[in-house]
Length: 136
Figure 1: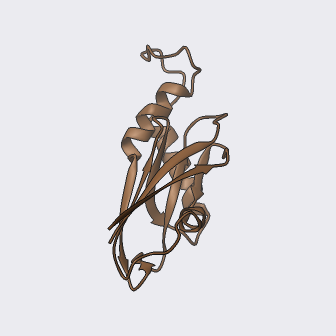
Figure 2: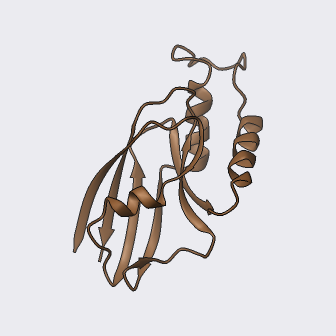
């Protein structure tokens, strides 16, 4: 069986935000076994799984990504939407647009310190829409 849900996240500030809770709240129930797939319908934000306990991980992510893909570079040609737009697209490509997690015994089979993150790369982003698909 396949079930699908749409979730609209509130606008988040630029950075990395743990969204495991809102994703699980959008789902009626998880199957005994299966897969959970989460897809973001945007090109300037991304999804990833990572450390969910120490908030300094989020700071390090922001610092590393900004160093790898800086704003205001003279070689960007896609600049009409602001200096953060093209870097946001590149960062979203690097992070990815989806995560897939096994479901075991009606729970996400995440590691002890893993959580689902939204990487928000725009300085003033709006709400973000996710498509959540549960396969059982």
